[in-house]
Structures are given as C-alpha cells and as structure tokens.
Image 1 (tube, rainbow, N blue to C red):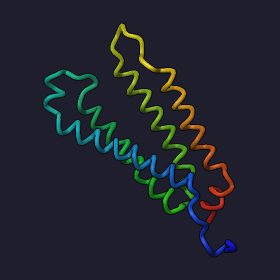
Image 2: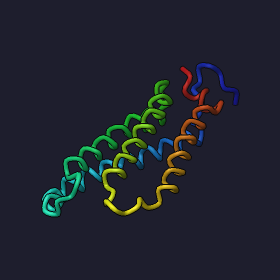
Image 3: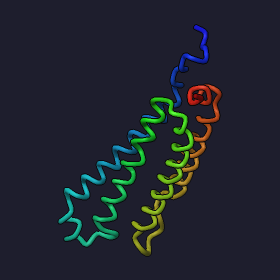
Length: 141
C-alpha cells in the first residue's frame, strides 16, 4: 500500500505506547484526586503535610495534563509532539517537587538514583519517539 499525501499515515507503535503511558499517568492523577477527596478528613486528622489540598490539586493537574496528550497522540494532531514534550517536563518537575515535599527530615531520600535514571529515560524516550521518521510523518498535516 502506497501512502499518498491525502491518506493519513498509521499511528506508529511507539506513539501508541506513549499515548497509553500518558493515559496511565492521567488516570493515576485522577485516582490521586479521588483518594484525597475520599480520605480528606483522615488526612486532616493525621496532619499530613503538605495536606489534602496539595494532594488533590496535584492529582487534578496530572489528570488534566494527560487527557489532551492522549487525545493529540492518538489522533495525530500536529500540536501533540510539542504538548507531550512539555507535559513530560511538567510531570517530572511536579514528581520531583512531590518527592522533595514528602521527605522525612533526617532520613536520606530512598532510591533517588533509580528515580533519576527513570526520569532521564522517560524524557529521552519521549523526545526520541518524536524524532523518528514515522512519528514525524504521522503528525505532519
């Protein structure tokens, strides 16, 4: 089958994988929001810091950022590669902010080297996927 300019190219496998990853992260954000609201009183009783407002807000942000990424990646919107790259950066910055805010003082951060390597891998993977010729063709309009 010859791909002519009027025929949209098929979604590359790695774009599908990336869309599913964004869907999973978005769903975990919505789950975090739901759990923070559901356990609101308990979080206040336990005097959790930074508290339920922060937990709910972070979940809502992750959930909201992920939905356009999934839609754009799945449907091949021309803005999706830039949006997904920015979303990955925002996700990672907020993740590391969460980690820094949840540190128990006096204890060294656990598994930070592994987490840093995963962060670098996820960022590199995302940027690599969008630099592939099949991905570039898929998002060209």
